[in-house]
Length: 255
Image 1 (cartoon, one colour):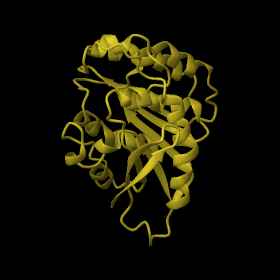
Image 2 (cartoon, one colour):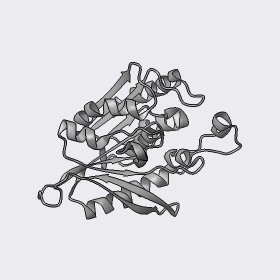
Image 3 (spheres, rainbow, N blue to C red):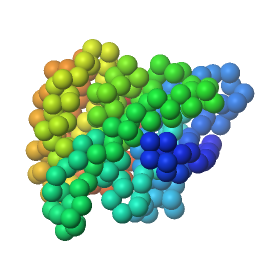
């Protein structure tokens, strides 16, 4: 079943929709469930809610593979460049001009967004649903994958497993590499990352996505005991591509 409710992102005093997937019998089964935390919640479940008309189809995928988990997704900030700001842990100097020809700096709110996610949102979910608190996984794509990687490094004792699809590491390349390099990931268990060979977004081409992912993987695989990197032949920067890869990723994360 799907459930929605509104929360306030307290660091920014912004209202935001939460979209949840819950096993149909979660109230009566007596079971407790792992939780998959995701970004871009509007794109997760229903095509009619998705920003580009196609969702990840998370509920359908879970039913198809028979995986019983709770999924909690927070909608992204759709105001102007808000998504870049909340999902960017550091400011990316000059990127506003490069991407959108505007004299505005992008990024810088991601650290507070992740702090809210780990220290306020997750405890709220644990308090109100039959979760297994120590089994919390995070996943995101593009800028959502970027902020997932940061959260994995900042809170490895909470989000011990994570998946970063088609990540926009180019947004904070050097900072992200240093963050991974300097983080204590001894408690981390699994990290999945991938990139398609046909990713294209604004002025960012497919080779840039690949070139920005490779050094991240080289650092991450030395820090995490189980690290997996896939290059998806023909993979595009779109929910339909992430949906196609989702079953295998979920099996990996929750095995």
